[in-house]
Image (cartoon, rainbow, N blue to C red; front, side, top):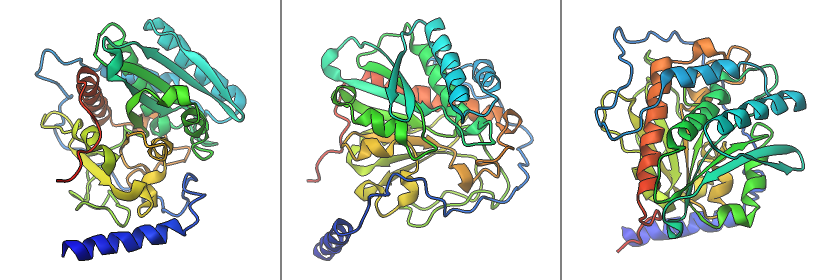
Length: 340
C-alpha cells in the first residue's frame, strides 16, 4: 500500500509540474457568499479568561477600540494613507519604531523588537490593512490589524528569545501584492523562522449549517457551526501549527489544517498573505474565521463593527498571543522532522 501511495503522489506532482500556476496568488472569485443566517448566540458566553497568571492577557476594550477607529473604507490612496497614519501612531505609542516600505503599487509597514538570542531567528506577525471598495472591512481586516496592534502593546516590553517582527501589508485585496513585495526582500525573510498571518478573526455563527467548507480538506470538519478559529499551515512546518493547540475551554476551539503540496491541490487555502511565504520556503500559518465560508458580510458594506462577535474576537486574539508567546520563547526548529 505504501508503494502505491507514493506512486500516486508522484503522479500528482508530475501533473502539478505541467500545470500553469501563474495565477496561484490571485484572489479566487468562485466561492459563493454564505446566506445571511441568524447568529443565535449561546445563552451564556463568558468573556474569555486565562487562568495562567504568567500569560499575557489581551484587552477586549483595546481590540474593539481599534475596530471603531478603523471603521472606514480603506481602499483609495488617501484612505490607506489615513490607515497607515493610525497604525504608525499606535505603534509609536507602544514604543515601537515603524518603517514605511514602498513598493510600486502600495506601502507596507514594518517594525521589529530584537530578541535576546540572535541565533534563534525571528517570528513575524502580520495582517493586511486595506479593504475592498464600498466596505469598511471591520472583520476583513480591521480585526487582523487590531490583533497585531494588541501584540505590539503586550510584547513591547516583554523580552523573548526570538526577535518579534510586525508587518501590515497593503494591497492584499488586489492580489496579495504587499506580501509578495515583502518576500522579495531577502533581508526581510532570511532570518524568519515562522510567520503568523491574521485575516478575518472576529466573526462567529452558532446555527446549524452556517459554516461551509471548501472541497479537498485533509481533515474532517468538526461541525457545521462557525464557532471555531481555523489555523492553516503547510505540512513542511507542522511545529508552527502545533503552537496553536488550545485546551482552554474559555477560548474558541481551534481547527488546525495541515496543507500538503503548498496548497496547489486546495487553492482556497492560498487566498491570503501567508501564501507568498510558502512559495519562498518560509513556514507560515493563516489564522482566520474562514471568511465567506462563514460570514454573510464578506466584501460587503455590512462588514461593520456591530457584526463583530466581541467574545469570539477577544478569544481569537488571546489564542494568537498564546501561540506567539510559545514561538517567541522557544528556540527549537520549526520545520517538520523527516519521516523515519
